[in-house]
Image (tube, rainbow, N blue to C red; front, side, top):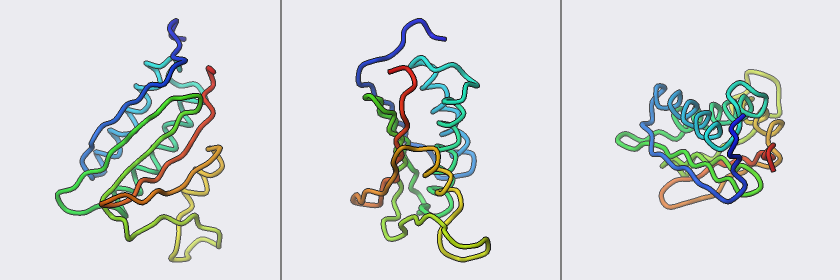
Length: 140
């Protein structure tokens, strides 16, 4: 484990291309950033961060893409880890799927996010939206 554990408010933000490769980059950047803040690669919390970022970034690429626009990944550590993924499509808000597989609305991935996070939601912005999730920081 990193000997210098981050205990004060820190932030990371990166604009990423709205592609499958960009979604992969978001996962790698998030994993690297939490490692720099003191969480070792491959531990349960690191894997949880990667899973949440994977879902939010994939949704941004699949449902929030506008030609010529990327999405942003923002991590804010301040007692909890807040993961934010922002895209340019504000009219397409995410909905967690509650029905059986095959229904048109919503996605199973957001149910996973809901299980892993202590809270998650959507914030409107101009232009677009931010989908966020908060995780309990294990080193507090």
